[in-house]
Length: 210
Ligand SMILES: *[C@@H]1O[C@H](CO)[C@@H](O)[C@H](O)[C@H]1NC(C)=O
Image (cartoon, rainbow, N blue to C red; front, top):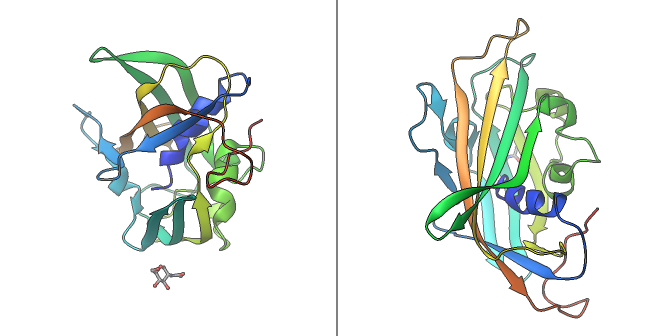
């Protein structure tokens, strides 16, 4: 559930502001899709997190999230975790790369960094003291305060509407730089739709942008 915000976040990072609003509609049947033709040792999002105690409900303000998730990835606390995310746009039936790409070489250093976009939309709502565990210690629970995830944003600038996907990969390296035998790969798809500006105080909350 958590990482669905990544796609929206990435769309906002790389655009300049000029006053249009976009909405990201993520299909609710299956938010996380397994990567196609994965290399041996590749796990999907269920190899990273156990979502069974995460509670979500959809209403006019966005998605209300509460409960907790449990870390599952079998790596070591001292490992360096690299996260890469690439956003692609579906253009006449073909997935085309976009300029929206993120590489975070040492995710654990910035997972709870207030200046990061995912802090604003995700990790600031973790209320128990597990920051030193990062995503590295299986069995660790991340307990959330109840929060509303609104998937409306106001990036301005030209923006093709339509279907996007974010291809997300997590890799872990031990202290000698050797990659662990498993990596995590998943995709999130959503439709980006331009919406007419609403009065402030309307049903949709706009995410603050840098
Ligand atoms: C985790 O979430 C479940 C379901 O909401 C809840 O019953 C349980 O008490 C939670 N655990 C913690 C440690 O908050």
